[in-house]
Image (cartoon, rainbow, N blue to C red; front, side, top):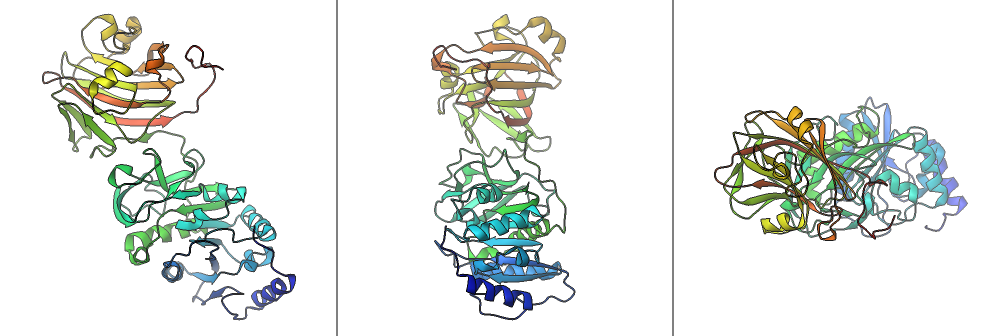
Length: 458
């Protein structure tokens, strides 16, 4: 925490605020009146650590964006502005690339009370590099900064086009910025609006699931954070300005949005590109963007999802054979450019119209047959789409075919542990034509009683 400001200074600053007088930038918030404005926003840009040279451009942009929505924007770097009476004047408070400990305990309490009464918070870029010892703030911003690579181009994947901050953005947003890694992944606590594709740049450390903009309902108020905005050029970019304006509209309550945590499935194949995927071995998968499918070609190879190493999860996908074809879905294998690594160290959920019981559709290949009666009742013939849900929790592997459980397998081999591995799709050979679509992933919390290796403990 920073040392408390003397009472006399705080009282003088409060008097200036209440009286609406203009004061130096180090005391009262500065702002120009906006014709017809009914609401106000406070932009706070105090730094106790690294100072971004883009702060002036950020302030100018926020003033212009606020004016477009009839919002009067005040600016300050004086923490004494954080009093209950003064904060009550604002619809939202923007932390614009703040760094370090910028509020004392009394000011923190005032801000918590402000949010509890329905106030809005908007954090920009280094707002995540702020107040590491204030747990409330860590929850509000969503995740704290850990580090970053050099400024470079990357692809931002928009996950929700309904929020005003992402409504006008493309699915794949190409831009150059300083890309933050975070100390934790906020996905299970916030509503992720956009994430970084770590395969499009170097230095990402979040194992392929890298949220970069999100929102949430927090402590009675509204919270929005974007990791973008390091560079001066960002604030002149129309796409980023639209992103920032949408965040401001949400934080001030001008536009409502769904900011409940992401608890459902997310697409890991978008129907157009293979971002996050990598081919191991011969052959390939062709993408047909007209119908959002992957179609196997040649082999034997493996297309594996390298963007994320998985522990407990549910994987859903559709698959279709043209005839008596062969393919499979692999789980629990280590990263490798050799497709045989998945065969020898993971498990294959088989797709094959005719073979031995432990090597046909629904089987854990060569380890356990599917429940054939249940499988045959649920299975649709070649030429029609079938769906798999493959659920991994601990060492337990369950397979659901078209909604019917057809296999329940528990691994007992330490060399094939399911608790930390990758997933992949097999292209078996030239004569095997298998298609996949709608590949979705949901990570699960590990639960007790899900199977454990002998000697692994409780």
